[in-house]
Image (cartoon, rainbow, N blue to C red; front, side, top):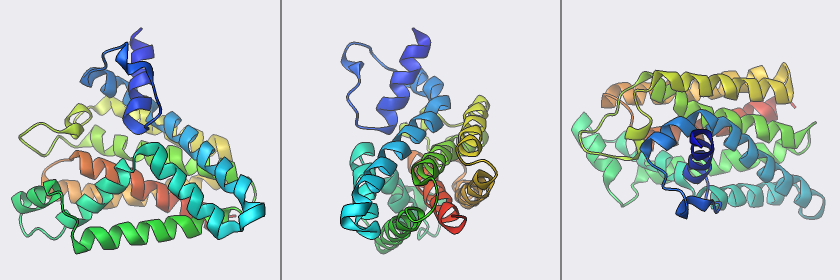
Amino acid sequence: MRAGRAALAAVAFLTRLPVPAGRVELGREDVARGAVLFPLVGAGIGALAGLVAVGLDARLGALLAAALAVAFEALLTGAIHLDGLADTADGLGGRTRERALAVMREPALGAFGVTALGLDLLVKTTAVAAILSGPEPVLALVAAFALGRAAPLALAAWFPYAREEDGIGRALAGRPWLAAGVVLGLALAVGALGVRGVWLVAAAALGVVALALVARRLGGVTGDVLGASAELGTTLALVAAAGTR
């Protein structure tokens, strides 16, 4: 039962897929336990997005197929990671830790957030389009999305929660055993692409390092920082997949 609840929590947390959550009350500890499975859910998201891209490529061309695959992924996940990336980028403009955290909570999107969002979607789409011309495009997306969902686990295993008030990131922050999920993400990437997957691991790690610097400035992670690491890690892994095709 606990394993089943954890798996349901992982799917419900990362996607908008209908799960029988109405019959099972899922709590914070279910999400924390299910977080170890985030890379596996990410691999499934990547597989679905990859199948959309490959299926549309012959009819629409690589760039349009990639754009629609990226749009499909955003719908599937509720764009939660894109929102985290934009809010975190806006927070970089705050001169103090307190101001940065306050800016990240504001509903309005600032110039930093718009720029980060636009660049991310542009790079992500063109990377997927390039991957379509190489070998095993679906497996490349499986590996990239698995690593992207492992990225927040690396930060959550190391950093505490940054805010005094409650938030979505508190369920994950400061739990060292989430490193097991990082290992799962690495195994999925290398298992899908072999030695080529190592390059994707290195690229995703750059995103983790960048967000670790942000977390250090904030005194810990927030839900936005964790979401940003997932999005940045995925995009950088996709770039690496495009560069090694």
